[in-house]
Length: 100
Image 1 (cartoon, rainbow, N blue to C red):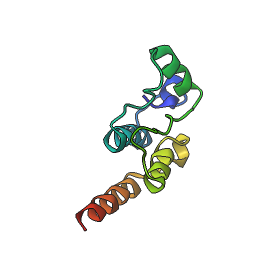
Image 2: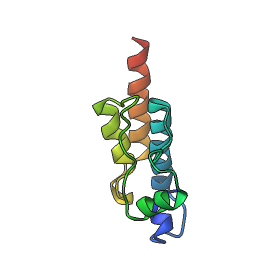
Image 3: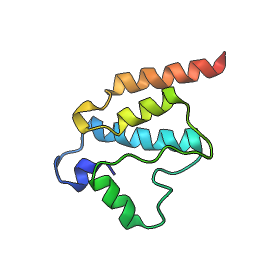
C-alpha cells in the first residue's frame, strides 16, 4: 500500500500508486525478499509506510546499484515517481540486458 493512502493525501487511485507497487514487486523479484521483511510485526511496516520510509536494501541477495536506484525512485514521493512509460523502458532495458 502506498504511503499516501495511509496518510489520506490522495483519495483516488492514480498511476503513481501502481508505480509504488511495481517497486515492491521488483524488490521481490530481484531479491527474493518481501518489502519490509526485516520487520516481524505488521504494525512496524504500517508505521514505516506512514512515515514515508522505503524498504531496506537486502543484504542476503543484494540488488545492484542501478536496479536499487530505480526501486527507490518507485518509492519516492508520489509526484517524484517515474511515469508508467519510464518504468516500462527501465524494465525493458533490464530484460534485454539479460538476453545478451
